[in-house]
Length: 385
Ligand code: HEM
Image (tube, rainbow, N blue to C red; front, side):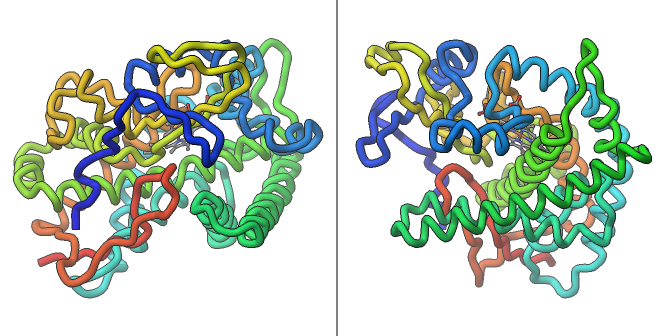
């Protein structure tokens, strides 16, 4: 039942995978070295697989795919609109929304992913951006289609299935892009009090974001900000279910909720891996990696590296220090980390308040995502007493 209790346990910090033609990096120090040296380990990975024209359309404004100096410029521009203060102001709204979603639950067995973990982050990000309520379902559908397609892609299906997945993903991304572009055009004419309007108006050193950059960035926020936070909530519940003593301890001492979430990010890292490409010949943990090779960097494995974390398979809600890298590290450190942490803290506290006993339904089982790059559940059947 708890096959995930033991994390990835690789033989070596780095190994070559001839099947996919790329390197897997599992070690913590090696991962930190890569994440902290963007000149040697470039993030412009996806662009390698498409034409320069396609890359310019698809990735302009997508921070995750940019290297310095473009990355700094973009991050400064969007960072202005996504401040800590702005996120902190959302606390009461997130709490109200969590209660609203939980109020709608009927009976004492339900799917917590469907009821809360899934809708909460998507509603919060759509609200922030200024997407009208009546269009939320549409956005969710596009984001799902695109995620489902990429999930199927990485399960190594046949060529035809891969092609269809790519088509679905491209169509969903395009539909979402056109929709956001129309909103951006409206915000240019008539600014509102929302993130899209602030993105339209953001200026650093006399430079502003283009329509395409705003569309791609909003797209990134919707896809990066929603399913990862869904997984954080689901994974935390899974861990509490697997370790009832931890559940009891945190319920008694709620000051542990923030560190519980950090431990959950370490133990089951929602975004399990990121990609980089080498810009010169390098040596990682004594292994020679040539220029132009792609590295899949496993945050999830690094987070269980026994060289850094004592008893890495023990789930300790008060682990100190806990230098987990579930949000990455370096210049690409997750922009939405304060928001994800806030949503996690608020939602977990409300779940503890409302359900004195909350267990994964012993007569049912969760459905895990099939893509290895994500660690999380689609379905989380729960029984409450
Ligand atoms: C980047 C994880 C929530 C927006 C990243 C990275 C990780 C990550 C690991 C770095 C990837 C790399 O270096 O290759 C997570 C997890 C989340 C979460 C585990 C939830 C628990 C969010 C939310 C948002 C968001 C809520 C926004 C609303 C972003 C953006 C980047 C990013 C824009 C790119 C930053 C850059 O490249 O400079 N995230 N994320 N994330 N995340 Fe998150």
